[in-house]
Length: 301
Ligand code: AMP
Figure (cartoon, rainbow, N blue to C red):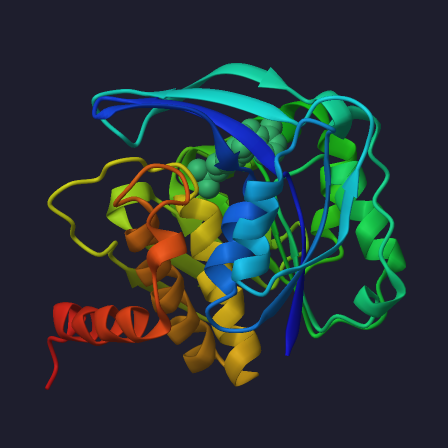
């Protein structure tokens, strides 16, 4: 079962208390695609500039990711520079250069249009809408966003929220979007905007899932050292949607298992800079940590 993702394919420059990295492969679509590729076939829609190196494209092809929908345009690739605080749950955007992304109009190759599982990764909501308009009947459409778009493209984002099933968002963004400080009230307010389920990412504290009929909470996998949190959210979404597509089980139980798979993938992502850990990962390692996760949260047997 294949998954379509639209999002940023980026150069990331990252500073954490453990060190820094310049111009490494990043972006919401990249983390999502690599995270999901352990479970299902993934197709990327996005844009890169003339400066995007062949070796980064090979990272996708080695994971079997379809890049027919990744367009190369004249100009420079999207570039993000972020700095983490000692508390790794807090980061500042130091630089954001949209570059080729500012004039990007997503065009889906014919073979992408019947995708059943779709992730509208963090990108301008106007582009998320363009993708929705080109899709056939998808089984599950999930979406992410961030403060930059909540503040700058509120109307388009509202339209997106009315057309998706699952919103994946972090706690501070949920507060910003809803105007509610309490995370439970924020989730309730967001459910009224359209999605059937809201997944709230809380960094090292795990994930909360809200729907009209249920609430589910899972911790993050406890690690002694978090090296670089970049991409945790997107690779979480990749593992989550990848597992849904692999099993085609979108029941409440299937969603809960997928949330744990997403958490497992994210826990690997943060063990090294950028995509370094994910590019060395294997499905058996994911399955093994999934089992450890079951032990970690088991209090009823
Ligand atoms: P996260 O999973 O939240 O850590 O996402 C990190 C990724 O988001 C980085 O690889 C960045 O390239 C990307 N990013 C940063 N700012 C934006 C933005 N405004 N829109 C889309 N992607 C972004």
